[in-house]
Image 1 (cartoon, one colour):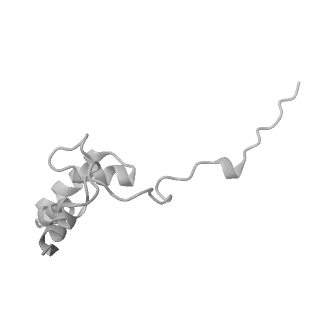
Image 2 (tube, helix red, strand yellow; image 1 turned 90 degrees about the vertical axis):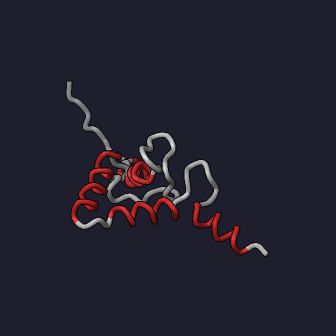
Length: 98
């Protein structure tokens, strides 16, 4: 008995998550957050472990402190996963009303 070769459909193969485009916008994660959910949201968007993103923030903070203003800016600009808009968008909308 001869086994038949396995046929692989190249169109049915799943894309590599590192080269595949992310789906949807970045959102701050409310379920896996430790502070504001920025690291967990970025990790979900990049399809990686949140611990790695948190370690990157700690390393950036230790190397020159850029992580703190970056984290605060992302906290203001990235909407939460259960909110329609970010904190900055809400503030701008509130200030632009007469």
